Length: 100
Image 1 (cartoon, one colour):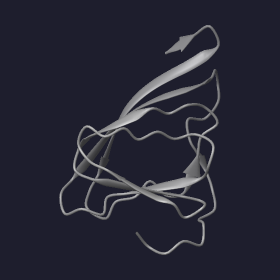
Image 2 (image 1 turned 90 degrees about the horizontal axis):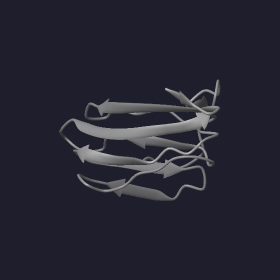
Image 3 (image 1 turned 90 degrees about the vertical axis):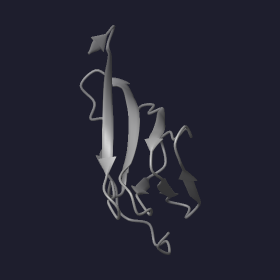
């Protein structure tokens, strides 16, 4: 949906155990919430954040990767807020970080 030059896209991202988003970044804001399972987010500075059901997870700016390090399927509800026509996600090179 576009509103006054801003694209707003809602997505539910499903992560099977071991599933990953791949390294990427966002030009816009990406607020989200984990609604099931656990997702570990690694930033390009190698900092790590693990979120579970009800925990917030946001993207934007720094390159990052999201990985389901648990044994059950994980779900992330995200809202992409971008300038009209911008891609919600942009591929980025992987940072040289240890596996989560």
